[in-house]
Each structure stands twice: as structure tokens, then as C-alpha cells.
Amino acid sequence: MDKIVIHGGVPLRGNVEISGSKNAALPIIIASILTEDVCVIENLPCINDVSLALDILKHMGASVRMLGKNTVEIDTKNVRAGSSPYDLVRRMRGSSYLLGAEIGRFGHAHVGWPGGCDFGVRPIDQHIKGFEAIGAKINIESGYIEATTPNGINGSQVYFDVVSVGATINLILASVMANGNTVIDNAAKEPHIVDLANFLNTCGANITGVGTDVIKIKGVKKLHGCTYAIIPDMIEAGTYMIAAAATKGNVRITNVIPKHLDSITAKLEEMGVEIEEHDDSVIVRRKGELNRVNVKTLPYPGFPTDMHPQMTSLLCLAHGVSYVTEGVFENRFKYVDELRRMGASIKVDGKTAIIEGGHPLSGAPVIAVDLRAGAAMIIAGLVATGKTEISEISSIERGYDDIVGKLHSLGANIKKIQEPDTIYLPKAN
Image 1 (tube, rainbow, N blue to C red):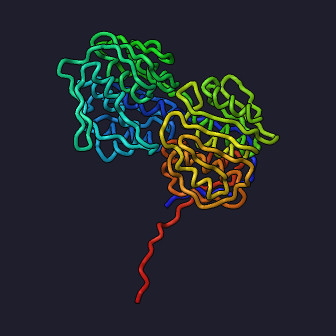
Image 2 (spheres, rainbow, N blue to C red):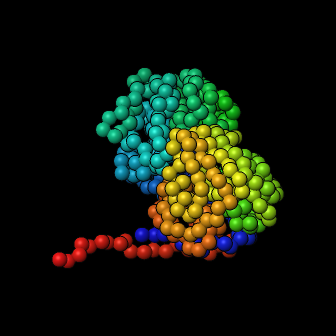
Image 3 (spheres, rainbow, N blue to C red):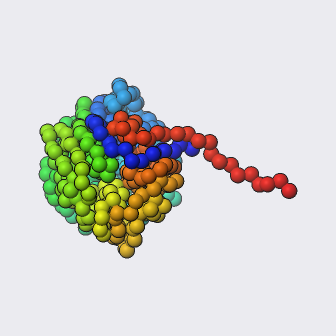
């Protein structure tokens, strides 16, 4: 059983380079199915979710060849519809994008129910609404989602009732080769959606308006392969920004797009952290005490839900009472019990965490209950007195590229250890 062990109290100092975006890599890898051609994807993060997505494509008939640590060549000519393994699909939320890709290329889809971190109910009703608008008929049975298009895929106007990243991505994938034009109203605007559209346009698609509320897609007959580099990961960057602030560090974070970090930067500056922006890097410094702030997570360009747990860890260090309100998912507070084990004073009222900061944190055995919660545990461990042991770290490795190595290079006393699973045997009579 792998664990991360941290001895806290060391300010982070130095340079850290951000990897490619997890949230862009997954839909782009799956979108390569649409090309029936060879795609070379660069700047991929070395994370478990990317490996899982590539394994799924291999099982579907794709040829996958690593050209380097962060570059992959994918030939999807021989991909078969409906052939994704159920046991792999259920391990990742991003596998839902197979629905859009299979509908877009084959006109039908058969995909197991997706998995991923549990933040409560994450319905796919908006995905289904989009698919039905362009002519798909959806059936859910025995753990699978099946789509058929008896009259073909035909462009349409779709208004999403709520802003949904997944539904926006899936409808783009399904309609990029539809007959006619598709208009997505109330579309999500996240940078990784823009990156997906840029990838598809490089492959011959005709998508405009991405990054705004209204996306317009003119269906094309065929896509072709390309070489494309993934954007930097704004959530990884934000996590290191908060880690630097928590430890009273001085860290230059490179390979970033500072504009993507605006909402995170604004909150950190409100807390008294110094942020210096450059063309493709930011420097984070903290010398004094932290101010209390209130945070509400919102769709982009609001404060990211994927930065919610990390920010809560930081607010444990700020004197006074802060509020973190979750505006995207219904239940993202499972990590709170783990922070309490370390001495944090947090109450949860509905969708709001009330954090009474200023209580010293002390190391304790904790669990990474999900991906970003695991990052929050690491941040808390970096500032806690004594030793923090984080178990169930596979969730962290789903989305962070060598987080232990990168933090160690910044001076953190952190390591990954492997311990044998404990087996309890009954006592002999």
C-alpha cells in the first residue's frame, strides 16, 4: 500500500514546471477517435487517468505508441464502436466522452456508466438532451448507455439548462461531423474546452465561439490527424500557488497561462499573498499573516471547484472565520473530516464550509478521499507540525504528475513509501 509521508514546516522555494492539463488531455485523447487517422499529442501529463484513457483506446483497436515521456502517437483507424471495457470505463469520469466520440464517428455508441471521484450525483441529463437534439435515441440499461441515430446526426440548436462542462464537450464531439450547423447556448467556457476545440479545428473541424456562452459548429464531412500540444494545467498550477502561500514560500511556477489563473490569483492577493505575473510564469511569495476571505466556486471564469479543497486547507491558516461555498457539485466536503484529524476547526452547513482559522495543524494519518482532497491533505501536511501520512494516494496520482518529486525539488520533506497491506489474523484459542 503506497503512502505519502510529509514532515511539515519547511517553506517551499525554487522553480516548478507545470505539466499538461489533465482536463484537456482526456477529451483530446478520446476526440482522436473522430479522425480515423494518426494524431500526435504533446505535453501530456504523466498521470494515471491519461494512462487509463490510452488503455481504453488500445482495447478499442487503436494503435498507441509513446514517442517520449509526454508525447503519444495514436492511430484510431481501426477503432471499433462499443468496444470500451466496462471495468476501465467505470474508473474515470472522462470516459463519458466516448459517447460523443462514438456518436460523432459511427452514428451509434455503447459505453459503460462512467466513474471518477464521488462528489454526489453528477447527472448526464444535459448530455442526453444534447444528443437527442441532434437526432440520437438514448437507452440506459444494465450499466450501459446506448445511443442510436436512426435518421442520422443533424445539426440543431441546444440550450443547456445548467452550465455543464461534460455536456458541452460531448455535444461538440457528437456534432462536429453532423449534417448542418449546431449551436450550443449556455455553453461552458473552461480553457480545456477551448483547447479541445482548437485541437478539432486543427484536424479540420469548423468550431467558433468557444470560450463564450454560444458555440457554433458547422458540420464537416471528415477530420484528419494532426500534431497538437496540450495547454498547461491550471489546477496543478493553482495547487502549487496555494502550497507556496501556505508554507510562507517563494516559488516560481513556470509553463502556465496566467490569465487562466486570474480567479485564484485574486483570492490569494486578497489574503495578502504577493503574486508576480510574467508571460508564462507566476511567482508566489508570502511573508506576513493571511487574511480571512470568502470563496464561492463557480463555472469558469469563476473560482474553480477543483481548487475548493486546497483553498480550504489554506484558510485553516488564516485568522478569523472564512466561508467556502460549493457552487458546482452538491457534495464536495468529504475531506473535511480528514482536516479535522489534523486539528482544523471546520463546520459544514449545506454547501458551505465555515472555517475558523488560526488553529495549529498537527500531522496525522489521513486519507485522500478524492483527487483534489488528496492535494488538500498534502498542503495541510506541508505546514503541520510532525508527521503526516496520507494513504489511498492512487486518487492523487490520477491527476498530479509527480507531485512528490516536484515538491521535494522545492525543499519539502516529502516522500512516497510502500508498505505491505496489514492482514489481521484471528488469535488462536
